Image (cartoon, rainbow, N blue to C red):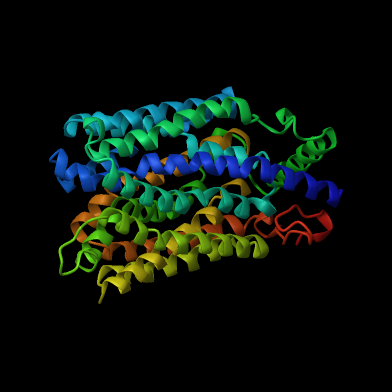
Length: 454
């Protein structure tokens, strides 16, 4: 293999695709999770209880669960460009129209429709990336893409706080209404841009030269052959594979934790820090902006953890072990957050919890392609994401009723599933140890056969 050609090709693909896909995912996260901040206004203006907000946050996953696998199969049929554009435009419209909900029924309906509209976006992107990047790069590439989660949360929290503080009453609309409008419209615009900017696959990438396209397709064909030789699957029968369900069990712990954080982080910060922020004077001006600013700290910790841990994972090739350690860190963080001795200790716990959980994500999504390919990868990745994210239906209620304590036990469950994943996937698959650090000079990049560990 021509290492210079491979490095050049991967560098070009990374810079063309990853920042753009990360931007799309940023607004996906903002439009899904902004109800966590909108609750601060909706409870007062619409009369919703926290219980109604929690059920609405979780009921999003009803439509998401039902349409995730069919959506990914349709993406495979119609191509990423058209299908991702459809997803983004539809969710942007639904998110914007959520500004006009008037009661629990319309609010629940909007959340279900948002789940239907978004279904297939994240697993579709993960499946799409497998066509472009070899296994040795996958955790780092997914990490760069998934940095959109903490970045979206940081930007979304600050922007949402500013909108709630500054837009209240403008044009007769409440601040939370403007939140949905101003954060939903960009998704529609970006969805339209996908039709112009996103190639369906390497063969459609006009910005790659003929030799770069040929190298990339040959590299991916080589990995497909090795995956089949190692006991992988390319048919829908793979959905019954025990390895898929182990991954579902593992990802369930992370899905519950991250959804609980998304739904309750602003409220946990507000409850802990409001007495300090308001002070003896009782001046609450700029309170929501300050809450948003403090809420960014766990996301900063998550960014650092994702970058460091994904690089360790790609360098060592030991995905499941890295996942187990990350979940152990998250468990400690949740324990600190559950019974903090001070607001700052609780915030430190949330930082550890978010860092541990988010560090798992890019490493985890490097596991399914080790044994799934073709239609099995499209359906299997969607199945793992949808079933595990069903935990998002009850995650907010879990924290709302019992507090942060049960989250530590859920992280321990994830650790046990990580051990099972090591036994079932990495220990038994030659691909589990066929990973090596990127060659010097590229940072993230492909490896030559001579450098792979056999």
